[in-house]
Amino acid sequence: MAKREYTVKNYRLEWTQDGRDEGQVSAVTYGESAAQDYKARKEAETGVSDVQVVPVKPGT
Image (tube, rainbow, N blue to C red; front, side, top):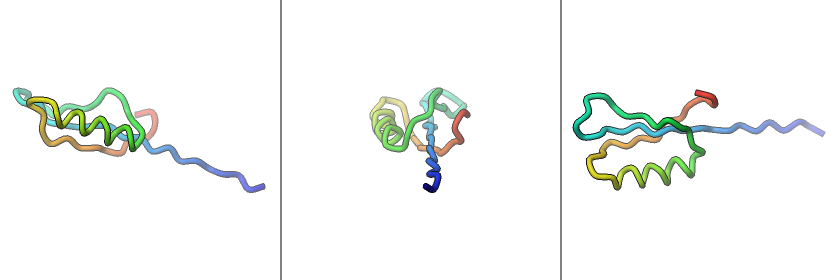
């Protein structure tokens, strides 16, 4: 039987927060669907703009 390889893709969020000079980055990584859910939540927060879902390598 052929060996199957599974590729896990991880994502983090990056956004701009009013009153801060530096961009913000999520401390954890998410799967793709969770990242999209958290992006929607983050976009609904007051003072948050330019929310991006960014692919990252596992463990980073």
